[in-house]
Image 1 (cartoon, helix red, strand yellow):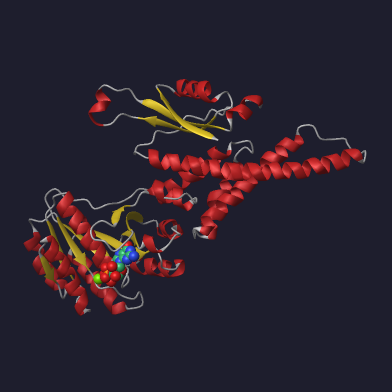
Image 2 (cartoon, rainbow, N blue to C red):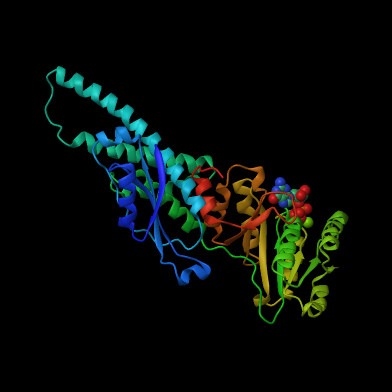
Amino acid sequence: MIIKKYTAETEEEAIMMAKEELGSNAIVMNMKKIKPRGFRRFFQKPSVEITAAVDDPAVAQASKPKVVKPEPKEEKSTDTSAIEKRLDNLAMLLEQKVANEAKQNKIVSDVAELARSSAGAESEKAEEPEVDEATKARDRFIELAYNQLHNNEVNENYAKTITEELKSKDSKTPLDEMLGFVYQKLVLKLGEIHTIDTLEDKTKFLFFIGPTGVGKTTTIAKLAATYKLEKDMKVALLTADTYRIAAEEQLKTYAGIMDLPIDIIYTADDLKEKMDSYKEYNLVFVDTVGHSYKNQEQREEIQALLDCIPIEQRDVFLVLSATTKYNDLLRITKTYETMTKYSMIFTKLDETGAYGNILNLKLATGAMLSYVAWGQNVPDDIGELNAQKIARQLLGGCD
Ligand SMILES: Nc1nc2c(ncn2[C@@H]2O[C@H](COP(=O)(O)OP(=O)(O)O)[C@@H](O)[C@H]2O)c(=O)[nH]1
Ligand SMILES: [Mg+2]
């Protein structure tokens, strides 16, 4: 198999280049419009990049041409070429797998056909076996895609809904196109990503809530560092986690290292009183006490803290660990749902290979996804959730 990328002004030109080099059997695996960025956009035209593949060219020339011209796809807004490349590889792997199985099925059906004809039962057939085979390959693809999602702990019902829609596709739809369809659906379902934003003339209070031990304090340290050091914002820390002696110290240590002001709030009234002293700050990160979703009293305390800050000035992030069981995550999110609107941060991606819960919780709560954390290093192990990357991983692609 030879895989190559071709860039030209138009799709047709790129396909011609591919055919010229790889032969008429080249298959277009992926097509992407490239918009020049930055100052380049003033003197460079947009171009089209295609990824084309062909089996061993010597073999390819001998067989029937099967160039597949994709429907023009929507322009991608982000720079996802590395992801696209891996997705292409993944598409090819899946396609090969399905093709191999189809070949095996064909051998089986050939043998059956031979047996029938030698028994003198040869009669009705014509085009049918080909259609049967395409349907079989499509169904097998659906099964594979479902299994991939399920192995990644995507909830069965969601995995089913997402893959079953493929049945409405023509059975002759190329497999890479079907894979692209599932991928796009996943990206869409993961939805828009919400990240920290600032107000022009007011301080934004960012609350981090969630169960104990999921990484709230560590996440605050990572984000506070990023916003102070990289984005040059005026940042302060507040902690309401006064239950555990070590918890207070932990944030104080980070504050010391990053040279950030830190204060402790014991009650909601404390916060109300102190609010004004943060006028000059862009962002105030508020660490809260981690609590069990069963503890009503602690929940009320958090609710009281949230209520101190006008809605436009507050942003709530529910911190969840990707390693927590789906049913527990559901319970946690339901509890917080009654208190406030929130976005979700998933931590400890480094401790699990299955990212299904990210999609599950997005679909179950409708809350926006925001950041993901993948380790204990402050501030490096955190970033905005990348829906394309998660979608690819859910389909079994590697990093
Ligand atoms: N492996 C891993 N550990 C993390 C991550 N985020 C936090 N931790 C660790 O999880 C433990 C609890 O973190 P902490 O911030 O104190 O959680 P909190 O109780 O929610 O504030 C600490 O040992 C952290 O270093 C992560 O993304 N991956
Ligand atoms: Mg903490």
